Length: 77
Image 1 (cartoon, rainbow, N blue to C red):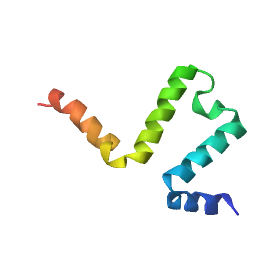
Image 2 (spheres, rainbow, N blue to C red):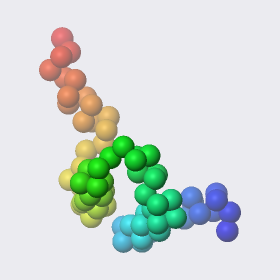
Image 3 (cartoon, helix red, strand yellow):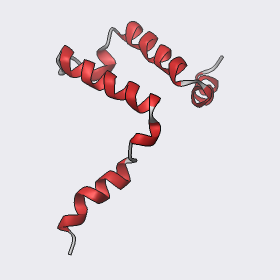
Image 4 (tube, rainbow, N blue to C red):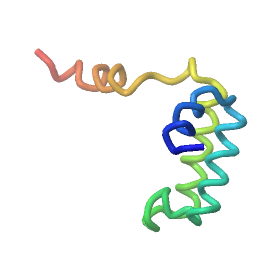
């Protein structure tokens, strides 16, 4: 299977399957892909927990553009 085919299949995976892929990639890269060693284990755990929450409850998250607009709204006149 080519890289292009793999990338096309990713959106079809369930949240659990995507998590399994993330874990396997982290194992292969020894977690270097997360931050090049700049994050603490606690920070990595927080990020992973938030990824899992977003995957499990996508309706509770806002897209970046909407979040950015809300943050900048008080400063626009």
